[in-house]
Image (tube, rainbow, N blue to C red; front, side, top):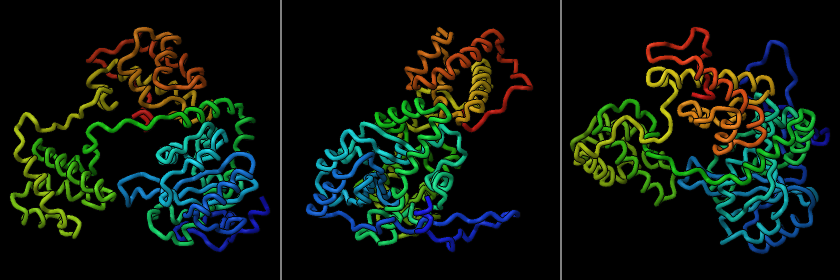
Length: 445
């Protein structure tokens, strides 16, 4: 990696990082792509040239995408970054083209190297770019048990360089894109090929390469998540709203804001802040003038759509009692685990046993518990176990829940043993869990 270290500087250190007691040499900062910052591809002629260069290269593609989630309603890609051995780095503006079918043809059948594929693949699928094979560097880091798996952390570990992230939250829908942003975007794929090879070597040494291949295949085939039920309940500060009528105001304002944000392609929080919605719901103003006097309602964004907001409040105020929302969520899944000891002590005992088993496995194989099996699958298993709680029955349940073969091989037998133990040592509603029961962890709560 010496060639890359020759291209970095050491005089840019984070100002808020205190020097440790034992001085540790600062890693050099990766500051410039090896071939410089390429021009953005935004014309048909430039795209044709880029596709020819990518096709002439060899090996997998390092790929990244930039979105504008804090600024736009959509999660579409506003910049695509590619690097392939023998072709260099290419920055493509997907907004400039009616479709990218020709790019999809070049990528077809080749491996894509992506960091955190679950974040970037959805917006690429919207463009008709669908992988057949993926190598996810973040997932590889998780399977190897590294405590930090950000791209910057992995580059520090394997490439000996630091990666600045000062433009990660930029508005990538800006046109033209500033040159410092383009440099940042290019650096995101600059060393992905080298990082992939280093991680694969580690996976082989750890005996986890087959596990990784199963995870990568699942990532490549993953369907978009279904829409959230009652998404308005994610309003920040909702816990301050107590009355059903006030909850109806939150719901009505949230839905009105969502429609406006979608029409403008603007992030909902930039249209109307969550704090303003909660302020209106708790105060229950009786006029438009009273509404704009509330905290969060003095800005131009709130005033600009005042008739819309007031209409939403009026509709919520006029709802019959039977149509008012309650604090209880409409969900088919189990309740939050903190409620289990009171609502179903045997289920709480099953979850405690399952958690203890998974923590032990995770420590043994050096993999985070949430990567051994999804927390949702564990909660559903423990809340309402299948009739067959043998290893075969648990394996079948986990497979139906989307678990991979390697995960079932690791956890099916221990989970079956935990559920069997709980069945043979039942807790009544008057009996609490034993004093030595493991405390809840954030992985499964």
